[in-house]
Image (tube, rainbow, N blue to C red; front, side, top):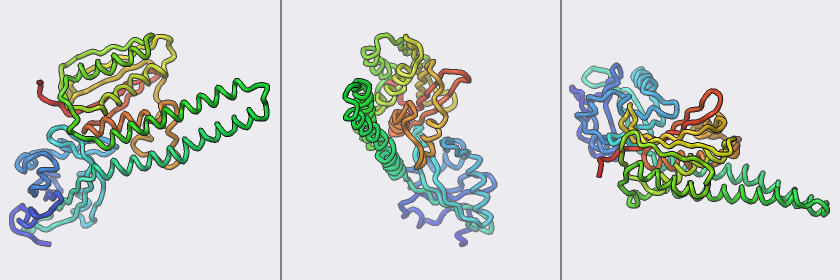
Length: 344
């Protein structure tokens, strides 16, 4: 499909409602774009031409700029590519997109045409439905089986009911916590940017920690401001940080657990970095793996439960991302990365 002699797109592409970019497959550099792609990426056409792929790729979910480069070469060889990708906008916000790559001849040169659609809302809704489906069909079903079984034993063993009653109470509490997490996920995945407030990150973190100190008086919770940072957040940030700190308290083996919250600037991206460090047993790998590739048989109640999903989706609703580090023996570091704002 020849278009013209220079590395530019026909003017008709400006009428499209999807982002379109023309790539040099050998260098993976953008040669031209339409206005819709400029809006989606948050960069001007001139800037995109100068950027390397890794500068606007989120590099999360096991995707890398190297993989995108390989896909460009494969498309140039005549094999169209269709896949999901996560871009990093100019302001640091991460957005899910659907990418379709196909070969294109421009002035006798082999180029790759990229059609890029914003699927952030669709991806969020799809993941939410999948998780809620598993909760209903797996977690709640198992808990209801426990309640039913204990009730039958109470009826059959009226002389020893205390243990069964306690188990029923614990299971009912687990269901209540799970339903509250579902409500938090609902709020996180239907964000309203009008409710966001410009705040100093350390002040927002201390507000969350102050509430937790009242609930857990024996715990030592410290907030360190390594670098003053500002961001725009809503209640989703408080939800995520509360879950991260609380996990470091309730899963600790020490009677006086210690959790440290550090506010810093990410050295690689300049984003707001919130690190939550604890001395708990390591978060099971299966829990972390389930966040990126949840399957039908994945249980969400291995200990941290649905709380990890609440943390992840709350931070992603703010255009950020979450990362986990686990020590060799014990201890975890949960890091939030959020788009920065200028100081007030």
